Every structure is written in C-alpha cells, then in structure tokens.
Length: 180
Image: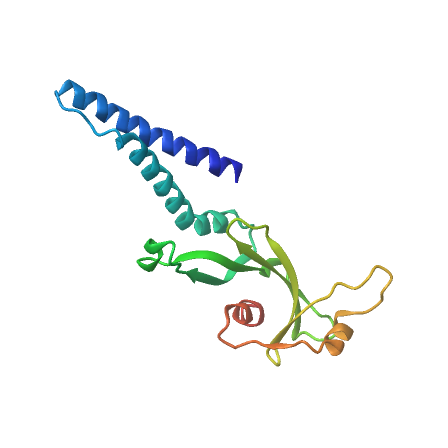
C-alpha cells in the first residue's frame, strides 16, 4: 500500500510536470496558460493511476498465485462513486482454491479437504479450510481440531451441521470433484 501511495504521488508530479512544460511552451508562443492547469493535470494523474490500479489489481493477484491454486469465483462491482465502473465493472474480490494440495479422506473418497483463500482489494488474505462432500454435493467450514484432539475429518463431517449446498456447476465443485 505504501508503494501504491508513492506511485500515486509520482503520477501526480509527472502529470504536473507535463502541465509545467505546456505552461512554458505557451509563454514562448506568447500566450498565457491558466493557473489551474498544473493542479488539474496533477489530479488527472492521481485519478488515472488509481483507476488503472483498480482494474489491474485482479490480474496482478492472479499472476502471483502459486501453482495448484486456481480462482473459483470472482465478484464484479459497480459503485456510484466510481462512475467508470458502470462502463466496465471492476473485480474487487475473488476466491481461490488450493486444488493442488487438496486432500482426500482415506475412509471416504467423496470427502475432500481444501483451503479457500478470500482476496479483497486493500485487505489481508483470509484462509478458510473447507470440507467438500462430492456425493451430496455440499461444503462446510472445517474447524481445525485442537492439538490434543484425535478427531478425524470423517468424524468432523458427521458432527458438522452447517452444510451448505454446492451446485454441480459451481467451479469449486467442478475443480475438486470432477477434475481428479
């Protein structure tokens, strides 16, 4: 975030410098540029850089994902205070699943344990372990057992009451249950 702030300030100074060049060229031409030209160009630099970053954030994050982690859901957003987002909605949140490290329950091959990562612009990444039942299909949060607990994933599945339905066309279901 600090680097983005520094880059935003640099964009403002760069555009203000361009306006300064225009101001000097207008003096050489015998005209006078308006006094508000430099602050206007600085504001344009700030807005242009921030809009560019908002639209490229998703691609930057996806390119940094390790092998085996794939995006399973994106959330596009339009906001009234970002009128340009009505022209092209922005992706400000997405969910990635660690498919490469998903584990299959030994006793029940229809039960998978996978880590989901929730990404949101300007927020820390959240990791949520999930139990996926490919037979039902459903998913539930996996509560990591305490250190001295001997509970297995299968026992956890039987005790879990907070199952949420998972559609068969959901990318999470497809990548866990059908790609194997």
